[in-house]
Amino acid sequence: MSLRLRLTLMLGSAFVLLWALAATWMLYDLRGQMMRSLDERLAASARMVAGLLLQLPQPLASDGTRAAISAEQLGIPNGLACQVSSLRGEVLARSHASPDQQLDADGLGFHEQLIDGVPWRSFTLVQGELRITTADRLDERNTLKRSVLLAAAVPVVVALLGSLALLWLGVGRGLAPLQRIREALTRRSADSLEPLQVGDLPGELKPLVETQNQLFQRIAQALARERRFTGDAAHELRSPLTAIKTHLQVARMTQGAAIDQALANAEAGADRLQRTLEQLLLLARVEGSLDFDDGQQCSAVQAARAAIADANQGQAFRIDLEIAADIDDAPLDMPPALAVAALRNLLDNALRHGAEQGRVRLAIRQQAGRVCFSVHDQGPGIPAQHLAQMSQRFWRSSGSNGSGLGLSIVQAIAQRCGCELRFNNGVEGLEVNLWVPLQQAT
Image (cartoon, rainbow, N blue to C red; front, side, top):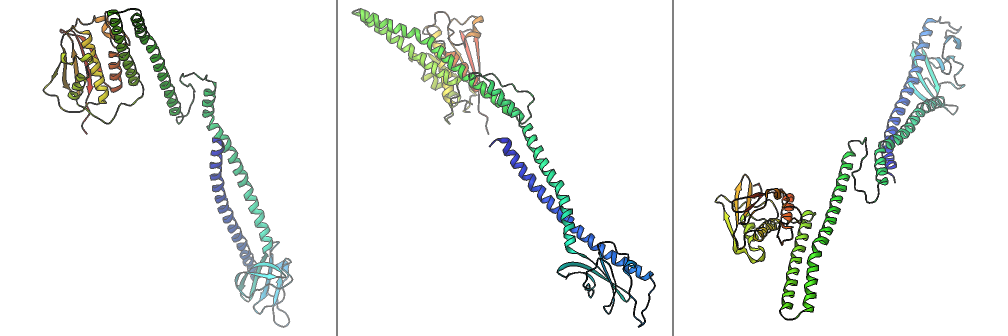
């Protein structure tokens, strides 16, 4: 069932119910008002006849009784029956519309009586020694009532049908923006991820289009990451694989110590390939939507000690840890796995590119709700014009044998967790500062 038909049925049913209740109330009230008006007409006619009788001369018959009064003297409106009788029951006058059988005038006020199988409604009034009874037929009343109710019901039915037609058109016009969105999506190619542009949208649909455009943007970013990972893997894994293959071919063609050297070189290439793969996978996970939050927390000191223990190449002994006196045990506002991975990559980079067998210093200080991890090496530093390129993928300084992904991973972790990464050429060599926010106490 279409949304237009569903809305029309729901709102139309409510309209029909409300119109039916209103029409029933109105017609019932109209019927009551009409019946009261007809009753008042009977009573007013009886009082009018009573007034006329007071003004007419009162002729007496030879026996001393009242003489009959002609119907023309009564002045009764057409369609009403009128009967004038004495208190003893003698009929003195009757209108032409009166039934052949005498009207029952014993009771005062309104009554309903059956005369010759026809129901009548009568009103009796006593004026002096006379009883004035007016009456009309109930079947004529019912005919009049049906005519009036039909005349009142026709406009209600026409208005209801018109309302339903306008409702159908209004709902269709109200849903026109959805139709434009559907047409815009239909016209797009299957691989198009451009933002959806649909003008003149109501306020209720703008968040829908904005959310859809955000989804397109996330899909485009995910595809871009996938293409970048594929390209990076193809670019970086080709050289180690070629080197390993070459060393194995050399080992097959040589003998003696040359075989051992070729196999050692192949093993070194395999190690480099493994490190590159691990770095690529970690970078893809950090830049993707994978969740690293395992419910664990760690302080700055705990993260630093774990990173030192994981330092590559078994050279953790070359790392000096300096902890400021004001460091507390407040947990870092980031997953421990990412904090340790970022610090480990900074330490590996310092160990690899610093002075040979030189010391690496990891200093921790706290300031304004953040912790700063400062990594200093004793190397020659980096030219100032190259500092901005250090966190780019696969950027390497001259003579480097790394994968060029370590600092890129740190930069990706910093962007994901709201950290800040800075590079400076210090007196001791390159200085890298990673500012990490602390969790706020609740």
